[in-house]
Image 1 (cartoon, rainbow, N blue to C red):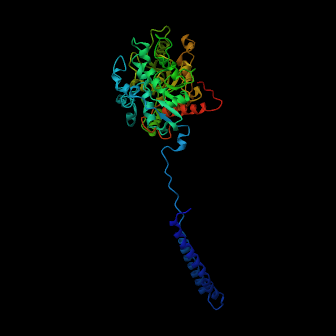
Image 2: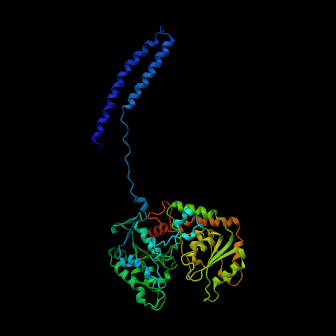
Image 3: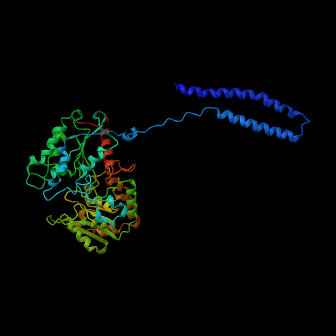
Length: 486
């Protein structure tokens, strides 16, 4: 029903229609004399012109008296438009601070060799990388940090607290996030003569709290997820004297989806996410600016290797690669990462990756290494020797076709001298190298964590891709054909 205030506006229209009816006889009377033969043609012409002007004026008066259409209603779009959260909404548990913030406050005591306060500053991104001045564009220097590789727990927690699909009422959530800093909590106990109870203490306390929550009991953990900021093997202790925590083997976490920088490819609940690099763009324009920079970069070396030999290992594969790199002369560049020289990145590493077409990526202390992502963010093409280093780890973040962005070389052929890395890489045409580099550069947004509360507009970074992947798998779990155990 229209509001009463609109009704009076209809009255002028009726009045005008009556005026139009009274005009018809007067116009006819004007036209009648025109048929008389006594009137000269010039007068006939002027009379017709006058009548046309009169008709035009009356029509204008008629149209102006008709009410204008009502303006279209103003629609106020919510910042949480339904289509933005079509995959689901996230509830972040308000855990006791002993499981997250107090761990950060204790940053001086998280590492047996020194403080981690600098590396955990700036919301986990670390200190600004001022030493990169002259290597990266000046306007992008504030987006670069000395970022620790074990801080995804902090990054994900901060972003989820500001996520557009976060809800504060658990009854409206489809996913539940557990903001426990598992990796930071266990880190100090990994290299000391600590007991199994010490390494499991924080995880045990967290699980007692979480498993007592009604929404955890409702699903038995199937719609819950957590970020564990280390590799999966640091949480898979089978025996008391073995390495790490046994957190993943605890009954309460069995059905919880886990975001890790290295996953167990045979565990459905492990999801591999990129290691944090030093580049944390503040906006979409930062990303496109960086992509253009690495795309136009002149590269003088065929390949490079940043790392250190593992002399304690028999037939150390890294040592073989370093030897081949030296034999390749100017075709290869190396960065010596002995000790802790490259722990959080150095200017020498970034500069070397920027100057090389390919970067060698043997396995690290485990199958993966942060260097994979440092290399690709610099627009260099990764060369793998273990399929588990990337292809079976980061499916959500990398192109489906491995050959479109990377090279795989059989490590056994390198070990026995059948092939050399240089000979393999020299066979790629410049056009093929260009295509692979463009694919690497295209995927840079999915490999980095933005330094912004709201993300990068319509551009998805690694955090966005990971959360979308979690929500998608929770939807798939609700399908009739999906089997859930208790």
